[in-house]
Length: 490
Image 1 (tube, rainbow, N blue to C red):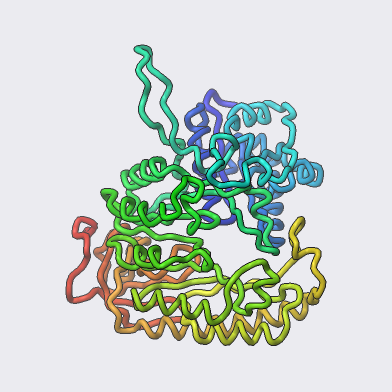
Image 2 (cartoon, helix red, strand yellow):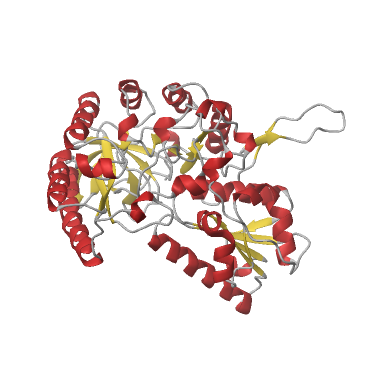
């Protein structure tokens, strides 16, 4: 192994995991590791796993096995599993998957470098022993202290070691970007206090912990200096931000501050709980310059009785009323959601209620998922289970409807003026980007025709001239190209 060992990351799952990987990369970089892109050229490979649902677990296991194969053919000496699957199953995963040289939980992150060096040296490192992370913090949010437990993605700022003169140093960012480009996730909080019957996340991510405002703003400024133009705020539940800081309206105060950060053109909030939406938050999301009117609302279903069985709130009428409030404030607002089909006890009438909601809601993007039992959840013990064939049939039916209604919503936008953030370099006269109502990765995209001079990171004002499914086609508006003239090249 070289004097400066090398490590590569493979990150699976959501944008929250992306932030966690970049924190780990920052820690390792600060402790003498060289972070590289290619796993086959690295001394160690860290697989940041996803443990949310069965398909994600399988993907994580397959990725670990593929990384382990590199030990036979390349430079790689160690493959280490971290992330949600590792935290959730720990030593059980290690026993079932000996190809992984170590399985480390969240508590190992602060000491990751030492453990990784030991693994690369051939030493045995004890695997994580899972526990319910909700038990690590007080039940009352205002009594919690983030410093009391390891919270991935929250150690972005720390004090530099004091220099020889004894004067304390300034803040140092413990994050190293692994994915470039003009868009970056920024973590608001971790964990969740809700008790949805189908979800295991609170048990392995823990209780809800907000990041301090100063840390969020410091990281936003750092990202802006690195060329980021759009911040995507992520957490398990962004609407709860601040409740453990003693301020239930902290998000409303934070958003204008983030939008005012020099270099940031867009702030987008993900993971909003419909039951926690409030008029003041809708107002900030729809009227603050630089904050896009974008509503990533976790509806999950629209049948009131079934939602109660899921330990959730709302119904078709309440959700449509919420959407009416949003569109009264911002008719152009983007709205996306996910829905679950086949939850235990779901009837044909429940499905009909959901399809009626989707037909009326005019959503821009819809994720449709089939229910599957998750270890340790209330739903796993419920009666009324549907067989896999019936769940698949319902998923197919609702997916077809979702495709139709989201395509119709995209078609309704023809003729609208949109502001497109350019994300891909030009190909001939075509430029790929996203309008304000389109979130990264999960929603549609906008193709700009005749904007070949726009550089990555430019925001171009354009008129929508066509659509294909959820994707739009637009042309630069006569009003001018672009909004940011400094982002145009020849």
